[in-house]
Image 1 (cartoon, one colour):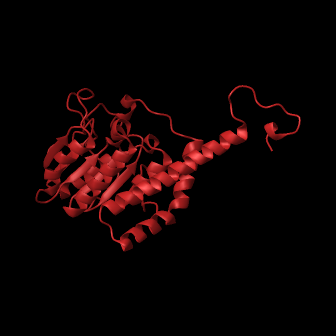
Image 2 (image 1 turned 135 degrees about the vertical axis):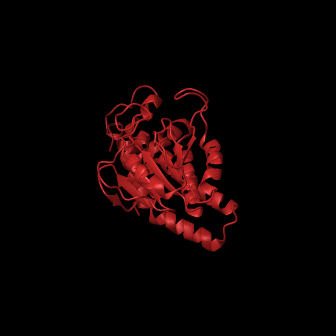
Image 3 (image 1 turned 60 degrees about the horizontal axis):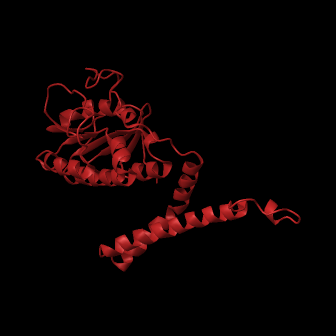
Length: 266
C-alpha cells in the first residue's frame, strides 16, 4: 500500500497524483498505445485486400514474436539511446581522410553473391567496405548511397546516389523515396548492381526509424528480384533495440565488424 493509503497519513500536497496512480496511468498509456498499434497494423493489412487466411497467418506471426518485442521495448526504456548530432553520423572511412580507402585488403573476404543482402554492424564503415571491394568484380556496376562515398579506383562502373543535394554536408537532403527512384534504374539494368549504403543513420535522424526500415525492406526486395546485391553498414547505437531487431530480421546475413557472418535473429 502506498504512503497515501496508510491510516493517519496526509494526502499529497499540490496537484501531483500519488505514486500508485502515476504508475497506473503510465501502464494504461502503454497498454493503449500497444492496442492502437496492433489495430492500425491489422487495418493496414485488411485495406490491402488480404484474405482471411493471410490475415490469420499475419496475426499468428505477430503473436509469436510478441514476447521478444515486449522484452526489447522494456530494455530500450530502461536504457534509451541518447540522440546523436547529425555530424557524428557521417562516419569516417577506416580512419583515413574522407573518400579514401586502403588499396589492399588485409585478409581474404568472401564476395557477396547476387541476390544477397548483408548488414554489417560497425561504428564506422570498415568490414562493409572490405566486402564491397571483394565483391565489385562480380557486378557490372557499383551504386554508392553514402554521405562520404569511398573512392573505389578504376574497374567497372561506379554510380554515386547523393544523400544530399548540395555539398558534402550541405544542401537539401534527399528523402529515402527520392533515393529509391534513383536506384531503380541501375539495379534493374542488365547484370544487376552491387549496392552499398552507409547513410542509414541519416535516414533515421531526418526521416525516422520507420521510414529507414521501410527503405531497407524495399531495397532488399529490389536486389533479390534483379539479381543484384546489397551491403549496408550501420551503427546499431543509432536505433532503439526494437528497431534494431526489426532491421536485422530483414537481411539474409548480419555481420559484426570483427566476427564471421551469423544468421539474423528469428
